[in-house]
Length: 183
Image (cartoon, rainbow, N blue to C red; front, top):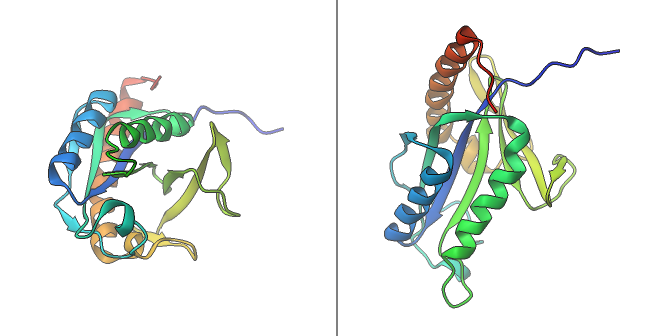
């Protein structure tokens, strides 16, 4: 029989993209209201890896990554995705999404993203949401997997995620030293 241990808390991270910078800013504001202070906000990056969103959201999409100071229980990921879906829905105009938010978390071992799309490598986590093991941390870097989206496998995003992971590890050490648990 295995011994049950509570999981370490994890760091919430979101990729947010839109063709409208004011909508991007509004989505980030709403995320911060829910998840707490932002401790990382990335530079604006072109989101040009796919045309999948162009018809609905327009061209010239820009993307930002944010992470939050508050750590969370990884079992809350489906709730996080349902909340980000509500932000997207709240910003719809004329039946079209104006922002896309891809939430997930960083742990010591990996980057997990939440999605509503099922697939063989995505276990179901509740509420209609699946967990996508997007990157694993090995040999001092994040390693892509055969299904990792090309943008997440790129040098720019991996370097950014390594910086966020370092911040997370410092926070996790503080939590453990204080003997606190994340609720």
